[in-house]
Every structure is written in structure tokens, then in C-alpha cells.
Length: 250
Image 1 (cartoon, rainbow, N blue to C red):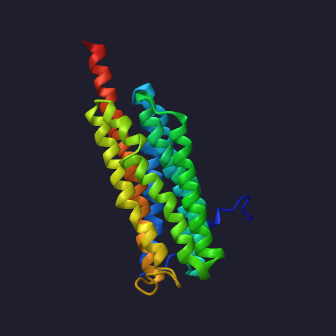
Image 2 (spheres, rainbow, N blue to C red; image 1 turned 180 degrees about the vertical axis):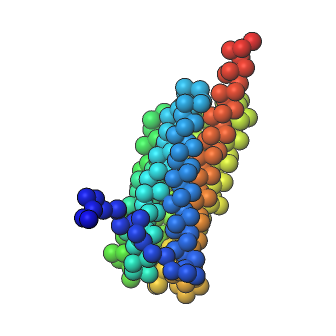
């Protein structure tokens, strides 16, 4: 009997026994999808002003989950790093992570200029990183330095610039704590990506990490950063909603 449909190829990807990198691709895709369901469901459970933030958190993990399905398939078929898929994922999800700063600070006076500044820095960082890792590999150090300008710009805005000042002026300890936690994700969690970039052949740390180890760290780092980012937003949203509900009931 002829089948009337066929499953997408990523459902048929075969991960070999002992392929720990392949396992992390699979676990990453499942974890991202589970987080997506959770974040989307929570959009109906939080106060209205937080719903956009929860929606964006869900979009970030959903986009990552879809890409991880395809990256798992690519890895299983070729045994090579899915560099292009990663950058497609990052060029969508990293700007959205920057959007989260604007959304949670909007109520305390964040201007659209902050939003566009963070998006610009993130795109600058990713485009330069992609060019250095693929097109201009022989001058990867130069492109890495150019990419770092964008990363430093984001870190500065969150730790010392507009985002930091808006949070400090809000007199809301929960908001201040959330911005600080997200800032640590940027400073520590995102540090794995420039380290990985420098470990590519021809980079400053070339030979320190194998390409297989690099994908392993990327997969774990992506899951922690993207899901953790969303959980910080959720914690802030649910605490704000609880306060609103309590005030309404009084």
C-alpha cells in the first residue's frame, strides 16, 4: 500500500550509539519545544503587560527547536558542524532576545531607540561573525574583532547604559533583579560563542577544542541561554501578575 504522505526528514535522522553530540542536538530540540509550549501557555496566565514578553520568549525557543531538528538531521547525515543553520537560528533568536530588554523596560520609559540600538548591535555581531567563520576564514581574527564590537555594545547597554539606568530608576527590585540576571546571561552565558569562534581552524584558540566538542558546548549553551532567558522573563512576569492580582483582591 502506497503511503499518501511522507514524514519530514528530521523525524528519520539516525543518531548512532555513542554519538554524544547527536544526542545533545536531539535533547536540545526537545527541550526547546517543551519550553515553547510552557511559555506560550503562560501568555494566558500573566498580566496583560507581560504577555508580549512571554510570547517572544516562546518564539525564541520555537525557532531554536525547529532549527535544532534540522541541525540534528544535518549532523546525523554528514557528521559536520551545521554552521549555516546555527547562524540562521541566531540571526532570528538573538535580536529577539534583545527585544526582551525593551519589552520589560517599556513600562518604565524605554524608548524605541534602545530597541533598535540593541537589534543593530546583535545583527552587527552575527553578520561579522558569520563572515569570519565562513567567507573570510583566513582573516577570521579581524572579523572576530569586528563582531566583538557588537557584543560589547549590547553588554554595555545592559550593564552600564540605558537599560541599566532605566531599571535603576524604576525602584522595582524585581525588575532590577531580572535585568541583572539577563545581564549575566549576556556576560557569562554568551561567552561560550566567542570562545567557540576563536577555536575554529585559523582562530586564536585553534586546536584547543575539537570541532565535535565545540558543537557539544554550543548545544548545551544554546539550551541554557535561551530557555534560561525565558525563565527569567517568566519569573518577573508571574511575580508582577501576582502583585496585580493581590492588589485587585484588596
